[in-house]
Image 1 (tube, rainbow, N blue to C red):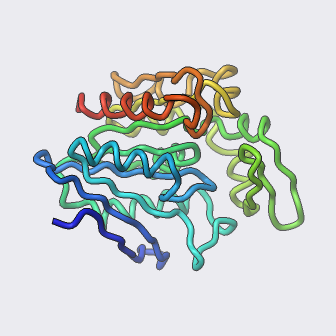
Image 2 (image 1 turned 60 degrees about the vertical axis):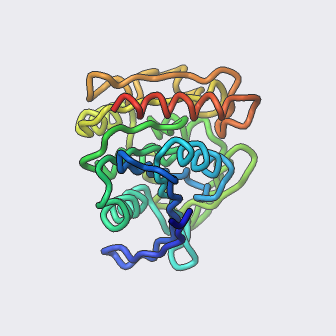
Length: 248
């Protein structure tokens, strides 16, 4: 049996999506875990590589994909675009699985919530962005004529005007809660204990976990940053995710 597969699909809107599936040696429950990276991330960043190793060892096939490409650059994307990518991957790469689980890191959180995927066993959001206008208010950014530069933890990335508009005016707390109410499956938010997302959480602790499924909940990983790079925070976060998925 092959251990992994690199693949490319074309969405209904003709976007080229590059992805990868890592296969568990044994997957008797026929389950798949789909990981959605953050705004300026990739499917191959350390967090997602470690998550893939961790869950493959525990009997999950792992699906990852990039939310931008040479053909469709990040500055031309919006959260609506990213949601379309996710739904395309679920349709074309995950239909054969009996159970599908989802995680989204950072902006991968709103990507999942906006997509409103169906037939998902459980969702776990990793330090997700929510109440986006409040997040943009505490995040460094600089406007120019036809783009915006965002500072993500010291890394500057270019956002298109539509993404900037979306972040400043959409998906405030009430809209986030409305999205979670419609999801239908159990959802857990795992927050880091520092960073812009946590600053917003300290001001507004509702987020997505307080609406929707009766088992929705939140956990905070102590001594952790946004990418869970400090100490044993990544191991704790992955174990928390695994324990959550195993309930469903």
